[in-house]
Image (cartoon, rainbow, N blue to C red; front, side, top):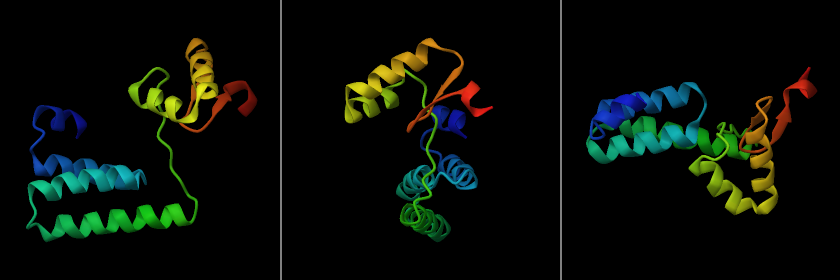
Length: 118
């Protein structure tokens, strides 16, 4: 769906499909954003509005229950740089350390060694 949206960003169905995929992955914040774009393009579509409402409600419910789903970020990505700026220099040092080692996975909230998980 992301590839389609890069080619045709104004296609409502592409945004709806991306949102449905995010819902299936329980990435409700991303789903809500995709549904919002679809509703902006088709404001009279009640089905999209209901889906947007559902995504927003699930996002809120998960936040209240502390069931946050974090996206993986690549060290050095723009999203990671924004998080590092927000979190301070320690996160930047951890991201740099994670980028140098192929055996480490950098998540948006932690850095883990694969050997420690075994």
